[in-house]
Length: 492
Ligand code: ATP
Image (cartoon, rainbow, N blue to C red):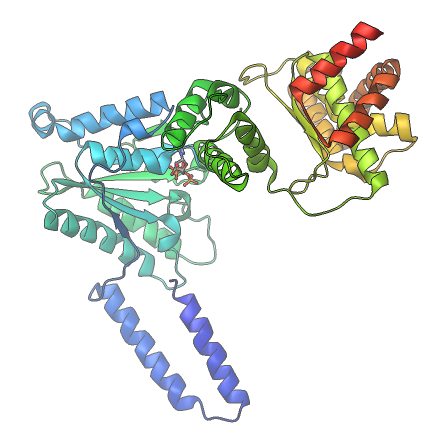
């Protein structure tokens, strides 16, 4: 627990006693004395703090428990190989690897990889987080760094382990660029101490230490930490691709009963942008849904609903009025119809059941994982984003605030077109006036709006019928929507 909390509570009690008429001076004097004594002992390392958690590594997490991340796993395993081979290091005079930095978005398995590295090298796994070192008292952070390295060595020896891995999550908090915190020098002292400890690591130490740190803000880290001899191996841990997502889903459904209709490939395809942590949560939510419905096995519909739950949050009790429900149905049908006309097969699900902040929503199924977009694709996304508002205007003669997020999305996409040199402005150097960018955003969106008006006017009857079907059924799957479209086209 940070020291600020007890101090805050003590001050509050003193204040209360003071206004109640008690003489708090002797109490205050005693507290100051105790504080000074405590800080002195802490700095001298005579009392230990228990900020660092030793996590037993014995056979717990192995590299096979990490789905996807083939590149990161290979890089890490290769680094671990020559940590294990002490003889070769000595023979070839290799400088010992002291630090590995895992960088990437949250929940992609950085902690998992570090634990797997500990298991792989039979090391003691010692975990902490950058925020554990942040204190308002000068010198305490640095003392904690010293204590961390000392404790890791001692515990490894006690457990007869040849090495220990110190895992520091959120290293950017501790390793922030020096001077970035103008208010006090405490951060700088803490970082300096970490550098000193890492510089002191030797390959012939009887207990060898390796520091693995994780961050999703590598740009904030002081360059001194990244120079050779410190964290000189940087391993990127990216969001998983489709194959990786499938592997992660398989790992997290190993212990769950799955119905015969479950197709994890389809779930992996529909979850572009999900991290490992999202996928773990998805598998868990699907199991909870099956449990709630009293079913013995998890089926595909549970997984599909779990995607919405993870993306948007729990269903909410908000009850929109009948008029609002009609408007929401028209709005979502507008998105779905344009999406399906632009890219047949693209709608995964549409509903008017509120979830999280959304009154209703249409979820698309990506064709394949894509990491860049063409002008045509961006314009198509703008049309799909504004189709809800245009549908409302067409059938109800005016728009509503329900399109606020869609407008934001359309503006974001239009700005992307501009920044990437895909608009009528051509290549932009970032010095264009805000007014010019604003007017270009407006003209891009207006042009796409006209196209959507045209499309939806041509399909006005279909839009009306689909919206009342959605109002009636509340939820439509992509397959149901396509079956309806097919029937409509056959009759027309
Ligand atoms: P953060 O940056 O937020 O600390 P992280 O990258 O360290 O996150 P982890 O803590 O390793 O992520 O992952 C959280 C959970 O997500 C894991 O316990 C695991 O259940 C699941 N998970 C994440 N990535 C993977 C993966 N590649 N394979 C299997 N499970 C994963």
